[in-house]
Image 1 (spheres, helix red, strand yellow):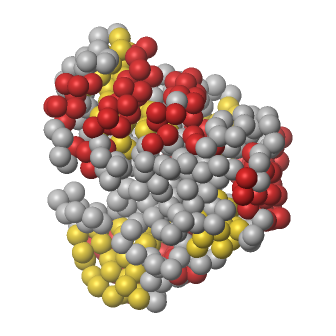
Image 2: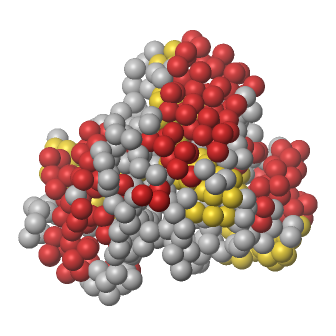
Length: 465
């Protein structure tokens, strides 16, 4: 289907039930007049980039079974350039897609990787902890509520006017949880005085002070009420909750919300963040005999052979599933603890990083100038060069390389950000809560070699202090 004049392929309305019925060719699928059209890629909206089309596969809770993973590998190999990306919302992307859009989509729909209705593809933006249900520290398993919310998002036509960027987060109190990504609505499990309930907030993160809370059995009702109220109050150009709350007071929104669901004031509680490194290496699950193993595809990219190899390990050594994470990594859950070293060895043989001390495991980078017209530098290539230099210095630092100010590779602010200003040159920022954007600007127009030397000097100075 050709894009419209704005370069946006319009949202598609449902033609049949998915994935049990055949998918109509793209040129036969009726188009909708979406209230908030989007240029974001989806499964049914393949967006063009410098290196070809991009298809984004939204995964339920970041999870994909081994058969589905192999289908993604096959599709990337048959219909695209073989580049598969783990995203910062725990989804997958296929890059470099050629002209066979319908065949690629059909192959993925056939294994259950599509929406239950075509118009519901855009709004399946629900993020869970990668270790939901198996985390030793969880208060509750968020997956049943997630299934209920996703069914409503896809099945309720009133919610299909949400922006493709409008996102919800469920936090079950896990030790492994990305708590720095802002969401339009977040819910976090709380236990107070022996009672569990959902604390929630708007346009922020679970580490923020919550706006209020609801009873545990009101989680689904809260989500629906917030989304419906947003659509009633927001103008079409106000695509995110933060846009609405810039003009409509939070107190006013909560007052309207209280007419639809019973709010319970909550004071003196705030979510604390756990260590990010729990997504790398072997970590115990609730079942003491099992571990999950976190592995990082270098700079978030996999090839078909790599994904097939991981799928085989998941089937033979794990619980048959892979879980992708917001750190652009993946978990292999359900591994017998005694087999962890063997599985890690096999993952490393496939090219994944399984140690937090590996410099390349700590770096993230956007597509850069090789695939994006806005990229000012080859961020992927520069990141590999920086990783080699940092590893030489014995450093494994959390660094984000961004080809432009849009920060597509990171929804949160990394401790260190390199913003490309020209080919091979970057401005260096350090995260600072008092500073907007990437943080405090430390140096301008640095080469990768200069960045590595500066970070090494800074590390040595901090150790000497």
